[in-house]
Image (cartoon, rainbow, N blue to C red; front, top):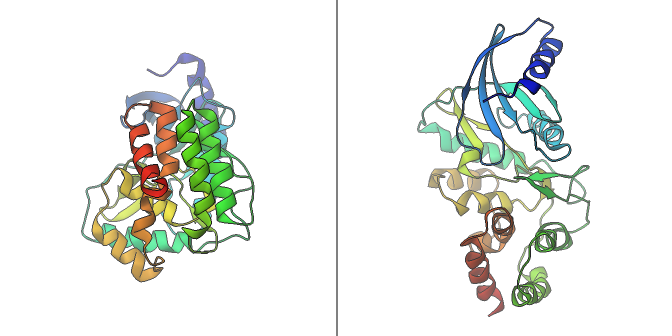
Length: 285
């Protein structure tokens, strides 16, 4: 249900940015998100996608808008056309998802490799953003290990109420991390690359949505794609043909996924903590 208190703002936002008088005639709920509400808007000037949340965190939609702009400027993926945003909503082009096709995974793998080739002198980003509804710190650091510990793992550990034995295991892991990651330059990451955060356009064009971007270690995106499954093996083959991953990258998947798992512990609790414990026991036994 679209609240009346923002309906007029949505129409004003559309009208101002499209230079037309736009009225929302109807809307249709879209399922899939667990943080925000999503609707397909049918207006006097076409159809649009609306994401809204009256309880959204400060600048949540602004940072998503800026992140999508950055991704679009790389010319690596199709990004929905951005219309406008305010504190409570974001409006973009509506994309009617197509069915999968054989060429999707090859295109997806090559495009992600091209995105990861976009680099920066330091790890981080010029602004903080969100991972789900949780704040994601992006202060620049000269090396990945410092960034990963300070702004990814420790940042989540401070949000949650974790047992002392878990905290002690992380401290032991932090000492080992410099020897576990090969040196690589920062890569521009999607930051939340699971199967729910891309669409398929025209049967073979991958479309990225819901980013949590930053310049980081590129295996973070690869690992996230494996956390919940849904990515064909061709995706990894074509990625590696375009931008080969360092040796033993599959061994580091668990290590990289400590971050999204901590995020899920803080958001949803449940069995995610057991997965964190299992990974820690592998490295800190």
